[in-house]
Length: 286
Figure 1 (cartoon, one colour):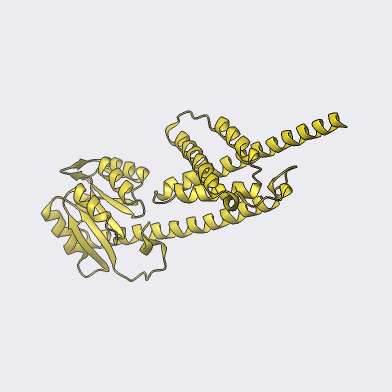
Figure 2: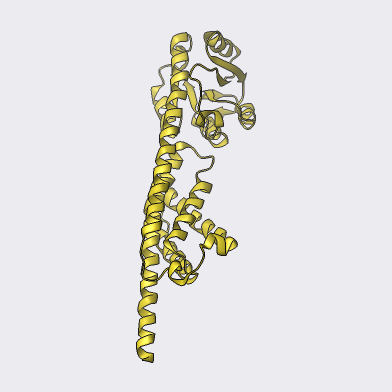
């Protein structure tokens, strides 16, 4: 995600805009419409050039023509979102092509303009500026929600009570006692989170619950505590949500809320079984 979009900023500062347009005439028209505004422009005429430029960073906004020599329709938008998920993109569609514009919004574009609107200087300036302002506001809201989520998970981890846990055994947190195992389980849990998100998007079947039960058994075997689960969840989320679109990040976080609670329930069940089994052995010995 672009640092300039997530950090504090001056609303009057110049925005750095990449114009992706293969028509020299339209390029010049857009640049002319933006001359004298607080928007600094540079232009490329192919999607491949746009991907290369975005990979270098230091941009805050993209204006993308959906009809390019090396890309047609929403394919170009999808490719740029993959290369630079932290940059808002405004797309340009053909005349009177609102349907394609709304499809682009659904895919992840911040806004759209019809080609015949670009001669309206006030409209194009307002659209581009508002696209960035909306994006920045959404990021701030998501950051605040992530902080609240972390605090809530911390309270769950600190207050959750199970019959037998790592604290009862006097063990250190798994992250400290066995970093290698912690990372291994984190990656396994991250794969489950990713599968849960994929299930929602593509309506595919994944044995999420079965995988969580097996993971809970593994965690119980190493005497993991609820605090360990929170550590694993937070670490997996940090990896999964790095360099993804805000919409995908929200999906992962929402699925994560359900997944972590389900995993914690299975771990509690594991410790209950362990406790009941231990009590039975003690009774037979008595």
